[in-house]
Length: 153
Image (cartoon, rainbow, N blue to C red):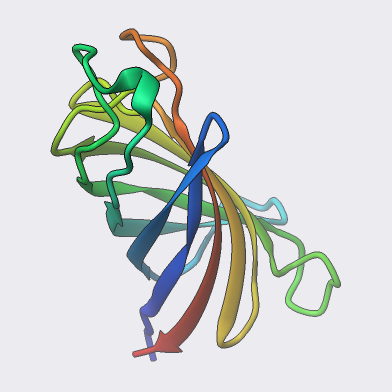
């Protein structure tokens, strides 16, 4: 029977050396093998919240750091290996995203979300970076460390 993995993830996000809390809800759908390779991919969708923060040096700039950001992203999560391989829980993910607000870190309406992580049965650990890929200035980006809990529904 087909299942969908739901993860609730939280942790700190950093822009320069300043942190703020973040929360994501991510849904990872059924895995599909890529041809006859050992790679698999799963569609995934994320809803996220990055809290605003006060950084004095950006207080009067065109883009501040005070806005909180809500975002929606959709893309793929990729695994390599067979089910019993030790490295199978490792994954990479890429998602284009749209979001609200503008900050020094996220200055355009669109961003790219890159993630590398480990996915256990009920937990996940991830390093995630969000930026616009230098398509709009400023492009400081947000880099976060996330811990998640997961349920298969």
